[in-house]
Image 1 (cartoon, one colour):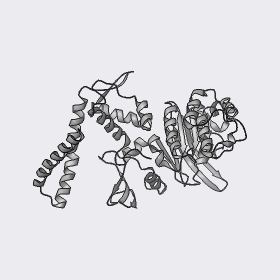
Image 2 (cartoon, one colour; image 1 turned 120 degrees about the vertical axis):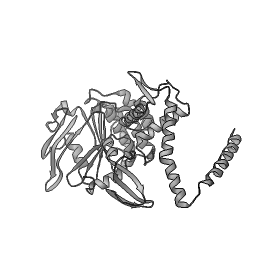
Image 3 (cartoon, helix red, strand yellow; image 1 turned 90 degrees about the horizontal axis):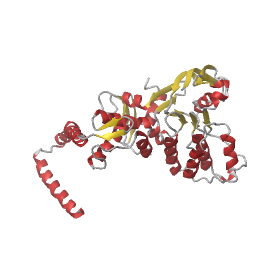
Length: 268
Length: 130
């Protein structure tokens, strides 16, 4: 388990995270949502030990990640949203990563590359498009075998078939004992695969609930009036609403509505 | 993007899907249905959601787990599904139809004629299809 305890972080004057706490559990897939500049990348970097907390701490299986002990960092794969590949062969690039991860699976890598249509014999990574580079990194992430997988907007630049491929490969290869945290600005395409939702509200706070808790607590729907709604937005068919769930049947979760309601403080 | 309807939780829609497949005969009584993981990957949903769907079906006595072997369709699954659906029709669908009829001023006698007409039409289209 990754445990975030009373974590605060600021860039100079600008406070980003204010005393947040959460536990990230095995076998769960977390969707990390937040407006631009709300601290999604910062949080992922803090978890992976690339930034140091202002206050509080983050532990992976009990070990403080900011200590950068190989024992903890070897369990974490961080897939950045910005990256640059030098002029090198795919084989060399993979060998470089494989060396760091004792649980690296060539079988998973092979499957992912094949499904992604990336030639394992590519001589120069420079010829790959942005989307293909991202698919390559994603394949390495899944193959790394690390218990914790942190991905910063992994679907950016991917074409439509690749997006569904991303979901398919993640569900197929993640396994029951691994945890994924995926930041995104397009939650609708991810909602079915997520077990938990994390929302950075832009004021330093963190909303953290499982999809089960969310659909037990609230109903999402379309209705003619916004009466009795905790939060609503007008739309062509009337109102999109979030209501407290009573005896009603559980509805699907509208992540955009959940996000908007959360950053406006309507679900506290 | 979303392959599921918004008005119903995904786990409930997955449970309905299995029920449809039992009714259609894709899965017979006593037959094993896909594992939680197989179904999750196949439908592109989180495994926890699939677990919830199977819990829901187990609670209704439509499937049962055999330790280490997986989930199996119960002997009376079809009856249970039909019974539950009849109840839902009476409790949810019919009141909504009545509400609309009252609002639009449609007398109940018109239904009988429409019912006969519908049966006639569906017989003709069935014969054409057959």
